[in-house]
Image 1 (tube, one colour):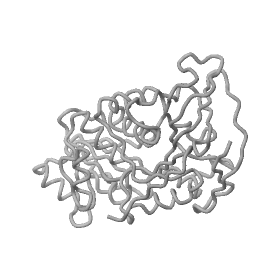
Image 2 (cartoon, rainbow, N blue to C red):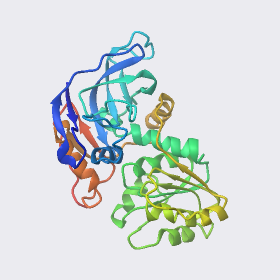
Image 3 (cartoon, rainbow, N blue to C red):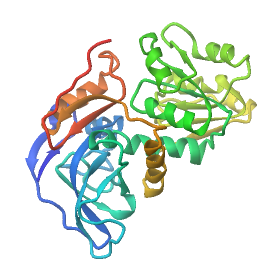
Image 4 (spheres, one colour):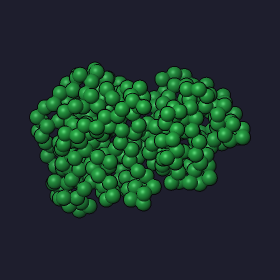
Length: 330
């Protein structure tokens, strides 16, 4: 099969398109013909060398798959050849999704939502599973609560807003003014232009000084450091970002706040929950750009510099085709 391989860590130029062998299928595994994958910040973090101790080289990376089952192991009865599936490969546990085929442990695999394409499904697996864990399992977001979602126009934020609305929360998000109409179309009740207004002051204004019940951080840095200032009493902060600097938690302590740091754990249950939301029309994928597998370097460059180019949503990879659909600067 063809696969995109990184022989060394570095910039997007390290990618090589190679012919590589397909793994044998174990008793509780399936082999999937990959129709589509997607690009995540975790991917370029791995590529540039943030996790050298966890990724032996040469490596095939990537964390989203939508495709069709072509072979099942001897002990697999959940799926049959020809089934459409989607999932996140085991993180740091073997080859990833930047390839024409993939062999996966069956407990990670879910049935693809019937009402969306493979490209759309591939944009959801890592993001959707992560947001579900953050909101349902960690923050335990409830109907009627208010959540602040940092970075609403991004690949994670676009799905986070929709899941929060499906739960029944009031959604406040940060986004550039040019994206306010867009984020409101996905369920944001209020949008804060972080380039012109301090988000802590804006939250106080929008909540009559009460603060939000949950802050969802997809950015880190100042967004995480100042999050407790926007919290209500007994609020929760959920972050997907590594701690790059020490945190002063005095404000969080004074509000009896809880902090959760999420590095997603894959399982079929989260995918099945996501599928139900998608098939009910409560969550819709947001694709910002589509490229073929051979242009993975360009896909990584686009994601890393997407804000300047007006990227909204996910960068997806059409593994079986030559689709190229890039965003225009807004």
